[in-house]
Amino acid sequence: MSDTKRDETTTDAATAKKVNPILWPFVQCQRVIRFLYDWVLSWAHSRFGTAALATLSFAESSFFPIPPDVLQMALSIERPKRSFYYAAVSAVASVCGAVLGWYIGHFLWDAVGPYFVPNIVSQENMDKVGRFFAEYGFWALFAAAFTPLPFKAFTITAGIAGMSIPIFAVSCLIGRSARFFLMGGLIYVFGPTIKSWIDKYFGPLTLAFLVLLIGGFYCVKFVL
Image 1 (tube, helix red, strand yellow):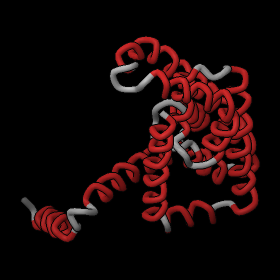
Image 2: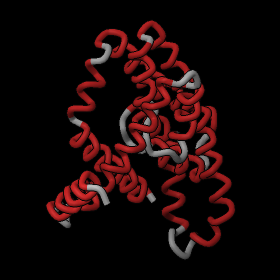
Image 3: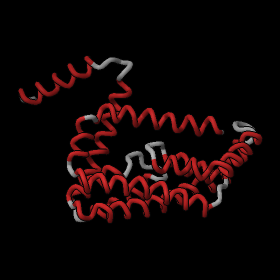
Image 4: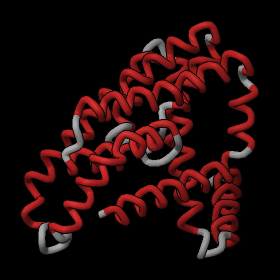
């Protein structure tokens, strides 16, 4: 082993020893999120950037953990005059992915529902979920679509609850459009300053993302 590689290994080992065992899971999550973040950003310099943005926006609404804002931001910084075009791509693809999430929840529940009710979740609680989405589904989905809450958890749960597809789609479209066009406007006005701010505060933002992710799933569990 060369001296350089030996030094790098020694440094990595020393760094690992310095990590508090309590913080170790957070550090590992941060590394995974950072890797995914950098991988997503790499598509901004590809001729397939717009297609990648549409794919990412679609996938994030049902299963992928990294929000499309990251790639939309990078593409918009490269070409500020197309900021609102990229916002439109994100919004439309995200709503299509949300509909997929609805169907995943709806048909998956048809398959596994009989095993969950009444063994794990009572029929009474499932009725509560249905009433909740019937009464507050529009605003719950709008909040999840516009904020960093785990949108996919809400789209899948809406499918399980059998929320009306037209109301579901309109709520998602309004919330996602508001979010992505706001991002497009910020990039159009402030440009690279936004990306520099995210890179500077990536650690605290990762923590906030994890808190919101766990909190969002807890809210879904509370409803169930």
